[in-house]
Image 1 (cartoon, rainbow, N blue to C red):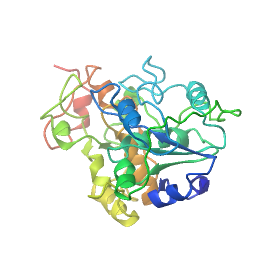
Image 2 (image 1 turned 135 degrees about the vertical axis):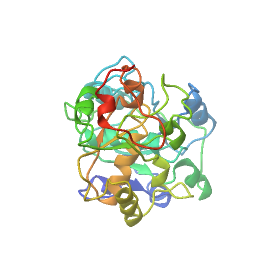
Image 3 (image 1 turned 30 degrees about the horizontal axis):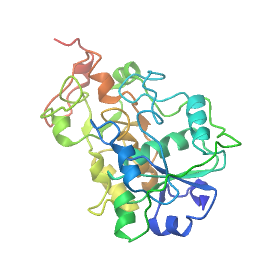
Image 4 (image 1 turned 120 degrees about the vertical axis):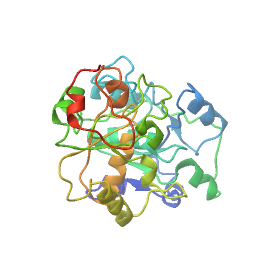
Length: 303
């Protein structure tokens, strides 16, 4: 079932396709449900009910390195070597086809997909389109049985370094040249609320582009042409004036734009992994309100 690893293949998998392939020993289903401000909520949800055969990986401890490797922020990336070791321990091998799902529209699962795709995982990866809710809506089976996979005999052979990422100072120096997309909710972008980071607002020059704009009412990703129109309206379409960079609160939701752009047939965005959690802790100025703000704001000292 690892057709998703073929060149040009969609990074999405339908619930029907996954249901047909549940018995495939090479497919590893990964539950990555997670809730902001509720440590352990995802694991509790997994224990209560999950897809048959699914294992659980935690955003905080498996898909990030809270020790701070690579980039600052609330969810910095682990080293590729550490990530490969974590995958192997969980039973994901070099040729495993990994299917991630969540219950929040796909943005946590997109982080897992993006990490595997970024590092060139041989077996391929996909996001379950519509996630947990789509599986339940289809009347498909669930279980409380915890899947036990032995450590992989052949660990994933991943690239030695992350690509398509940018650090804070490099981003700051290029503001005004880039098309910068803010994947957070619009009230956070405008600075009307900030539940976790030090200062409300957004990075100057950023365009408000909430990840929810990539999905329909059913929680599934929009069709290819609709996504292309959506990104074009944001100034991030095929004829974008500069490199497209996406950020969010901590480098997780931004990967949903990478997923959506891949489905749309657009260029992969660069991800600012530190995202607003890094920027807002750096002392650099932020912009508030509905307007992007000027690049010069970010090049001045915070007053």
